[in-house]
Length: 633
Figure 1 (cartoon, rainbow, N blue to C red):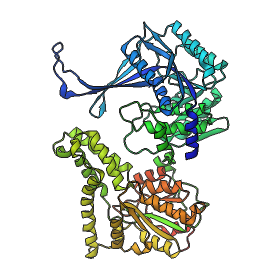
Figure 2: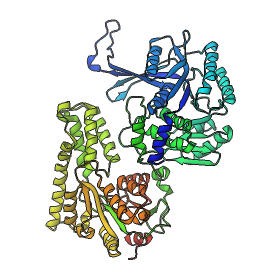
Figure 3: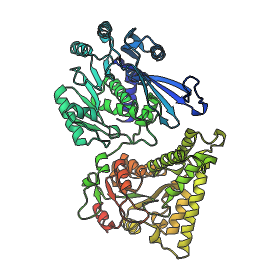
Figure 4: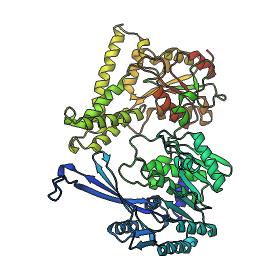
């Protein structure tokens, strides 16, 4: 889905009319503050004071919230509330969102409004408190709900069935009644049911891979992802059973869409930073349904639903929604996860002949390169090897502030884990971009007073001061003859560069490192001249990514039609994704920077997920690599 198609779909969605019948729940977030606790006179126990409280729609209500946020013109809700404060709060929220609630009925007895109370203390969500587990839907309410739904079908483009609760509205009688409504309806239905997916004949289904396996008699209890072959088998079996499109979600691995013509895989999205998957399934369902109601085919609908879920997983401690602006931001230029199974399982690797050159994508049609982009750090130079060990303590100290030496061990370890995770996910991007993320983490933890939080450049200066001290010491050893160029370059990198240049390939060096530092380091290692001035680094503007700029310049020079004559070598996901996006050949370098040769398997995983066509551990087999690329040496 390109930018124009996405804009057209968003415009069509703004004219759609969708009904949602299901289990309407309320998510209550109570932020606890132990510093306000006191001992209860009645019980002698410490109280658990709530500093703030926040309420948002869950279950079918969260689907409605997402539809409203996406700009659906008319939303009709069909469900049951209790005669209680939570039901009145849910009514208020729905009315504020301009939802038609004439189909929402109040049951005065044997029904509590379903509520999930989520106490949050520090960074952790505590044990949940639930209301509504013993509900019993009255037959009169069931009949009235079905009647209200039937009476509205002529005014709707699509109906969503949501089932989340075992003791919700989906009694056996309701399931039979809904199946009867579907049989006589002229509008499409899509169902997302935790427990009764085999009901509702005639509806399309959206479900996750574990739910799908359970429906074909397989229990997947392990925490590791469901293999694609098993997910595919489940999708095929369920399609044969139901004879309607199946949308099978797979978390970060995207979706499988099973249609009459077969299965199409919609890739997952690469998300940087912390994620919270609560409500992501509802966002995906809302996106799928909105696109279907707007006339999209199932694969395009799944792609749109994937964008919506990609937005909401980045919203922490809240059941989030996705607005058109947020969907545009993630969907206009999406970073997809490629080959996740291969990335996570090196046993499936295929190699070129007897070499260590791993073949990931098709390379039979590779054109002889005319331009080659090399990332610097970790691909050519190892002068900055160990930069993570410098960035990590800088970030930890920045987050903990004056308390970094005295902070409790639990807090220190929490911050350390967050920092390591963030550094791992942002490897290859500009340092200034990483520092923007650091500012967000400093503010999130809230230990440093707001007035003392530095801007991204301030934190970058702290990091650069320590990093450049290390680099300068290493360059000094080079100048004194204590070490040589081979000690600070990846095995075979310089011979590879010389061979490509001798073959007439134009070489470019690109990095997230500041440009003046990049040039100085290339000159110190003696290979700057090979690039004939084509050395590009960060220029202090987060909106100017050196690697993207170089790619655009090259494509402007050779023409987009000749993009296959461009090859990029890099050990970070940024250059790999950007090259793949533009049609060039991406060679991932999964380098062990400490030894300067051999595999770094964590890098291999990242590079394959980013879209590498080939992966090598180093350039020790540069002759074989050149021949594979069609370069005569």
